[in-house]
Length: 449
Ligand SMILES: *[C@@H]1O[C@H](CO)[C@@H](O)[C@H](O)[C@H]1NC(C)=O
Ligand SMILES: *[C@@H]1O[C@H](CO)[C@@H](O)[C@H](O)[C@H]1NC(C)=O
Image 1: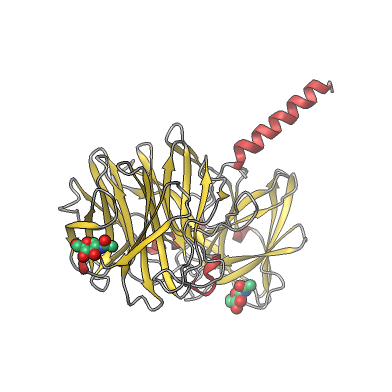
Image 2: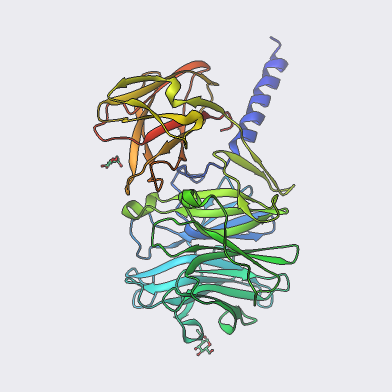
């Protein structure tokens, strides 16, 4: 082969790898450009020029107590570089290491050429119910802490911020013991709230975000079930002062928003991106990010479930990657594992009693030798998480967590990246583990990585 042909092939492979690198995989362990797990829970996105900044809670210490508001930057929403921490604990204040700083959201104030961060500021038992504000001249800061207080004298817990087209900004917050959800206007500096513009009384909403589309406001929020997921909702209104439409689901309710809670909602062309957290209270730093396209194709916002997808930021569009399905029941069932019927499983069948002596091998899985995302579709009706070992071609196994799905007939998917060889592969599930794994419906093998 002529050497210029070889180098052309090499460049094409690099291009392909680069193009494939930009996928979003909800629920996977996301790492930054230094290879560290991204710690930006309950976060928010700020766009400055063509750069995206992601501020969030650093929970690497697996605690709810304040450690830092982190800051990451990205040009593509996929590759994130950790920058200086935006907010650090200050002893003797409401942002000490024995207090709570959650859901940081940053907006740019044009009048003062200043970045203003709002966050849920609380004591360790969530009894103080305040907002906090900090300011900086740069997107990542570090920010200077100003104060924590109860907006308009009322409680504020899980909150968000919305900046309207005219530059007016609003605090969106769970108030009055999380019973009433309020929207209050900020002052021209974004330092305080001035007027309550709306209250959804008795709505028990939290963790809100708003996307404005064609002059209509879409409010997204979860209900209040602690760290547990619930069916997140949307509301529609032509004014922030209401009247809001009655609540409607953004995803099939049984999935409890695909085991996630809204953190931020980002416009993407005429659609959007739902950015949620998959909280894991027993190991908070291992809580995952669950981002999906939000599509208005039905006229109202709905999450588009996608195991692997990518955004075209220039075009304002998204693409859902399609994969190849292999049914669990078509594999070789060993030990105490059994084929089982369930109308919620694809093909009406799956494999149960995996683990604790039962295992499954799916054969003839086509791989490309480049490292591939595989989604495991499973049901776990327990109130706690399960997990399964996964081994490729008899090699070393990896453990994949299987969060409770909210019912034995509710199917969710979790991703795992595996090195399949080019051609045919066998993948074995749940061998050599003493605990039961979840019931397996199918796996989907993707080629984008
Ligand atoms: C916010 O405004 C209220 C008056 O509505 C005032 O009592 C409070 O001190 C202000 N808070 C801060 C931090 O400026
Ligand atoms: C795997 O799941 C079992 C419960 O089924 C749990 O006891 C165990 O701690 C989990 N393993 C890990 C490493 O999380």
